[in-house]
Image (cartoon, rainbow, N blue to C red; front, side, top):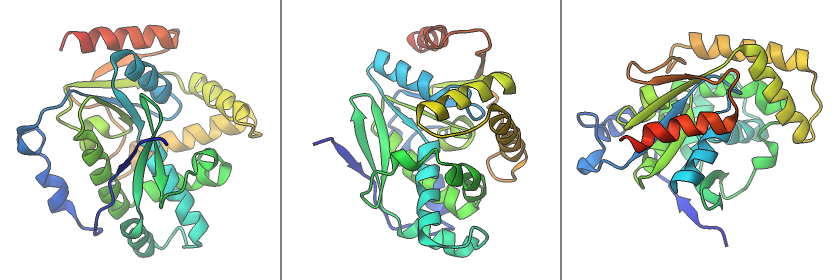
Length: 253
């Protein structure tokens, strides 16, 4: 049986006090300072692949936080709640049981209410809805709390769009990956085809541009490099070369 990390909690949409209590002078609660690596960047820049490869090399665990937003978005769609009804979506987030299962020794995947929905997370319906769901303040507060609790175990690599700036601002190593939109679109296009999903490159490119605009301009946790993040442009680099560079930075900590 695969090990499961159960992070079920009672939450409210305005639970900012509990969120903030986990951060005291840029350190974890109780002066615990585990080795954490935070990776931010736009969609399809390679965060998940790089993070997973790096975790395996370092002996850490990796979690792509986009998966928890996608999993919750899938639940919203399944529940029939209107994507415009933020109050009900917040209530749904508070009622949701989040767990994390090690699908490989170094790779964590979310379960939602005990269900593995990983095969559904790249479907067009989730792809279209996740930007709207993830920008809701109450949803972000609930899921950030889950991500921070996961980080307490230490030796975690976490990737997303606001990990360095919001979720884990105390991380010892912060990386911001970047690449041209066209290159990222080709990468996502190949991922979709590999997953058995039909898509055109033109549609994928258009969707990425839309997602970038929404991520950069959203009022809550906009996509931007942290002031102390190291920016890594992956254009022209193999995944192994990107991992090598971050590994060298981690080795110097």
